[in-house]
Amino acid sequence: MTQAPQEMSPREIVAALDQNIVGQADAKRAVAVAVRNRWRRKQLPEELQNEIAPKNILMMGPTGVGKTEIARRLAKLTGAPFLKVEATKYTEVGYYGRDVESMVRELVENSITMVRERERKNVEKDAVGRAEERLLDLLVPRPISYEMASEEENATDHYERTRERFRGMLRAGELEDRKVELTIEQRSTPMMLGGMGLEQMDVDLQGMFEKIMPKNSTRREMTVREARGVLLEQESESLLDKEAISQAAIELAENLGIIFLDEIDKIIATDGKGADVSRQGVQRDLLPIVEGTTVQTKHGYVSTDHVLFIAAGAFHKTSPSELMPELQGRFPIRVELNDLTKEDFVRILTEPNASLTVQYKSLLETEGLKISFTDDSLEELAAFAFHVNQTTQNIGARRLYTIMERLLEDLSFDAPDRKEKKVTIDADYVRERLTKVSQDEDLSRFIL
Image (cartoon, rainbow, N blue to C red; front, side, top):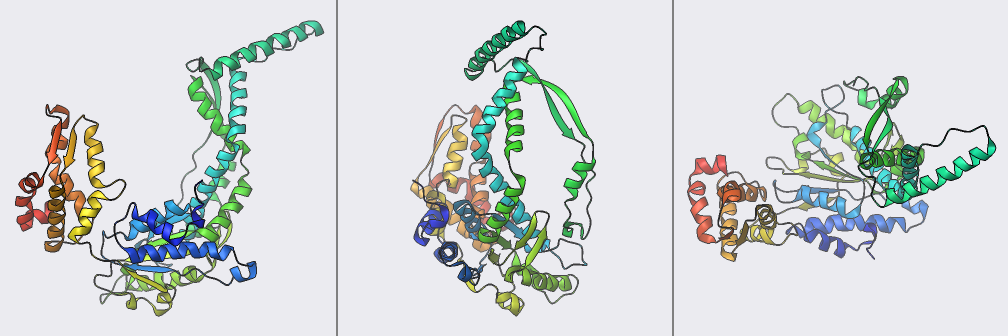
């Protein structure tokens, strides 16, 4: 039986992350401990739970070394409500941009989606049964009532027998292409309003418009196969308790939510003028959110006291010490991610479950073309990627995407027409296609 995500030990979390991300052990350990601490907190008495705040994490490292990937994989692994946002999206109130509180609203929306999917699975069995009954009503309409009691009784018996016969045919898949006429309710699309400060309103404008605007019902002819999906969706929605979903989602977001705040180094004020006032303002506005405050959403009040914040930035020309001291203090755990070495590139090409070599092999195999990589070809690819990163811009593991596309460009183009359906890629093949480009600085800058 699979362990619940929050019950995984830090060692198990790191091992799971290792299956898709190469290296960066310090960052993996930090996020693993942070996730485990949430489980530990839930085991404590309630009065002590309220006192324990999450230890937010600040990741520092160049682009392409795994900061975002660690957070994304952690979210999938833990099954927690997750939101990735760029700090540069936000501006101080009064400037054009987004209000920082909107990140909490988005986290709640993601949480509601998760809870809704979970609840849909719980009501799926009932919804399937109800959808089947509605399909039978469409296939075998109920008879009109007769005046004579005996005739009415015979008609009812005959109808029930016919209905059961159709039920058997329906379950056997014999009626999938039969046409039925279904009533579908369509709401008029309201005019979308936008503007500064509108997203801060706690009023559910969309819900208000849906109540005000008239509902249009249309009858559409479709196959039983298509109608089953529509009816299942309608019945599932009718069985869901929207109020209970909202409450469960808020609780989930408050206790297990993770917000990944990327590009935090871009809100550090520079020597120039212009947007610097707004950047400082974003830092000030982030303080209460990260420290813990209550945000009003259309689903209810949401506390950020126990939301885990993971901030990340390259910090090329700045350092974390240039953030406001108060904001620095909200991220007590600092993790530095390392530049990728040639050996790391080799591991990235081979170790992850869906490594780049596996992806390209699978893609070309759909054309009947089987490619294989020799060990020396992977060493050569890694050497090229490392060299280009050192001589031009260092974009980390993303360099492998450009290198691989350049390497396999001819094969990808000719794959449907090739007569030879087996290709072995060795070191000579790699050098032949990449040496000229990588040695020409202008070409490598713009092509690789």
